[in-house]
Image (cartoon, rainbow, N blue to C red; front, side, top):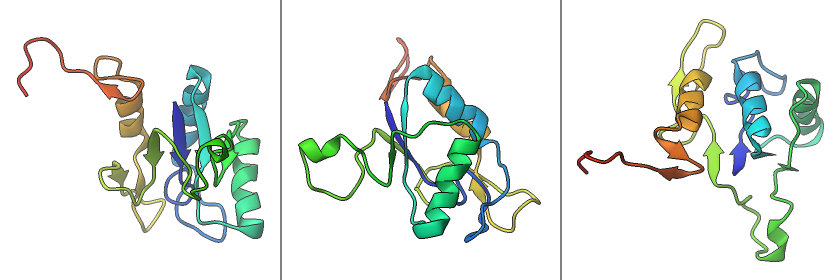
Length: 136
C-alpha cells in the first residue's frame, strides 16, 4: 500500500520551521514499512526545512519511497499530486487528533491511526470488510 504522510502535526508537533516533538509516529511508521507499505513524505516544507524533515525519517531509520512525489506515477500522469492509497495528515477530515500538553495545537493520534491501519478484522489493504450478520 502507498501511504502519503504529512510532517508537521502528523509525524511531530507543530513547531515549523523547527522539527517538532515526538508524538509516537515512529513506531507505527516502522510497522507500516515492515508490513511492506511504501511511505511518501507529503509536506509543504521546502529547502532546508524539507531537508530537516527527510533527516528526521533517516535518523529514525524509516525509509521513504518518495518525497513530495510518487516516483512511479510519472509513467501514467503528469499530475503534481502524489498518488497514494491513504493520506495521513492532521488537516485531513476524519484523521484522529489529540491535544496534549506538549503542544498548543492538536496533532495526529497515532494510537488511533494504528488501530485503523492494523485491525485486521476491519481492514485488509485498504478494503473495509463487513462481517456476516452486520447490517448496513
